[in-house]
Image 1 (spheres, rainbow, N blue to C red):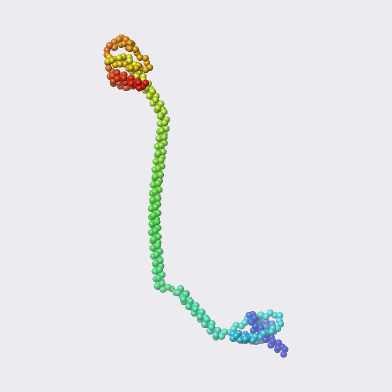
Image 2 (tube, one colour):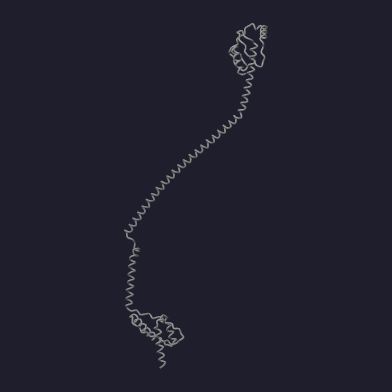
Length: 314
C-alpha cells in the first residue's frame, strides 16, 4: 500500500515537473532521463507526459480567456540531482491558424506582386517604339547642339589662330625693323667713330706739321727777304754806278743802307774820263732781276718804287 502511494506521489511530481514552465525550455530527452533517474518506468513517464500536456493545454486556454488558472505547486522530493526541464511540446495547429497564415501570406504576396509590377516590371520590359523615337530625337538634338558648339569652338579657335599669326607677323616685322635700325645706328656710329678718328689723326698730323710749316715758312720768308735785300742793294749800286741821266732824273733822296755812298765829284771825274759819259744813256724798257720780276717802267719810276719799298721794309 505504501509502495502504491509512493508511485502515485512520484507520478504527480513527474507531471508537475513536466508541466512547469521553467523545465519546458530544456530538451525532452534530458527530462525523460531525469524522470528515469527518479525511478519511474517508461509507462509511468508516458502517462506523466500525457497528463502534463493536458495540463499545459488547459493552462493556455485559461490564460487566453483571462480566467484564473489553478496551478498545482509540486513538491519535489529532496534530491541531489539537478533538474533540467525538457523543451515544451510543439502546439498543434487547427484550421484557424492555417486560415490566418493563408490570409497573411496572400496579403504579403499581393503586396510584393504589386510593388514588382509598379517598380520592377517597367524596368524589365523593353521600351516601346515611341520611347525609342523619343530617345532618338533627344540624342539627335544633343548631337546637333554638340556639333554646333564644336563648330563655334572651331571658328573661335581659327579666329584666335589668325589673330595670333597676324600679331606674330607684326612682331617679327617690328623686330626686323628694330634690328635694321639698330644695325644702321651701329654702322653710323662706327662710321662716325672712324671719321672722328680720321679727323683726330688729321688734327694730330696738322698739329705736328704746323710748327714745322711755320718754321719752314719763316725760314723761307727770311731767305726771300734776304735775297730781296741783296737784289735791292745790287740794283741800287748799279743805279748809283751809272750816275744821273740826261733827262735830269734825281737820285734817290736817301743812301743805300749798310753801304757808303759815292761823292758827286768822284762821279763827275769818272764820267769825264770815260768816253761813254758823253753819249746819252738809253732808256731801258725792261730790267731783269735775279728773282724773275719785270720792271717795264723808266728808271725814274723804278727808282721811286724801290725807294718806297725800302721805306716799307725799313
